Amino acid sequence: MTDLDGIVAVVTGAAGGLGTSVAERLADEGASLVLLDRSEDDMAKLASSVERRSGRTPLVLACDVRDAARVEQIADTVTRDRGPCGVVVNNAAVYQREPLEDHSMDLWNLTLDVNLRGYFLCTRSFGRSMLANGTGSIVNVSSIAERGPTIGAVSYCVSKAAVGALTRQTALEWGPHGVRANAISPGFMSTPMSSSFGADDIIREREQRVPLRHIASTEEVAGVVTFLAGPDSSYVSGAILTVDGGITLTLSQTFPRPTPPAA
Image 1: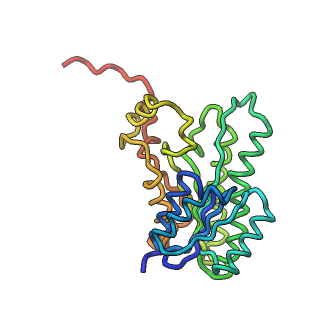
Image 2: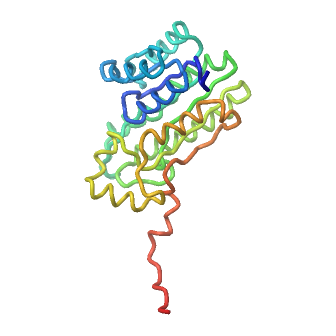
């Protein structure tokens, strides 16, 4: 028996890079998976991988996390068909860049709707069965952008900062009922979303700025998500765990320094 044996675990944005790795790690831990993304077709390969790894067939459902009625419907379906939800990983997100002075309301609304409204709706809907069952773990995927602004990404950074507030609020209100809520703040990560950030030479330069000297694989980050989802973190709630290889420690390295005197 593994740490999450038989526990119903919902992963949003499951077809994306991190979502896929999270789903596979949770499958390895024995979870009964529910995979949500906008298209069931995009999740077909992942569903086959999960079934091979765990021997369990995941429940695959198309879901736009912005749609409150659809999220409620799926939460009811999961409870009826699989049992009470024990883990929710809020991972679905969008990222686009526009300068602050030209940042369109369409992009602002889209980003906040997916990255924040979607997290709230899934927390609320799947959390009800956790509250009724007296146990559960919610893991929100934030970003180091929550406290380190990125030029041109105002809606993304604001949405991720708000995810931290939602995490702490959930931990406070639901902790007395046995439900934990935590978040991770990844730094640079190799995903389809980050592929637009630059060519290979830029990636190599970034690696040299990370104290651990490499960009995180999605599997490395998924391991932290799995830790927060499972019983080894049973007394951790309201935490925002930074998973960035130490990049946020390097601020002082960006400032000019005096040349040391010659020996």
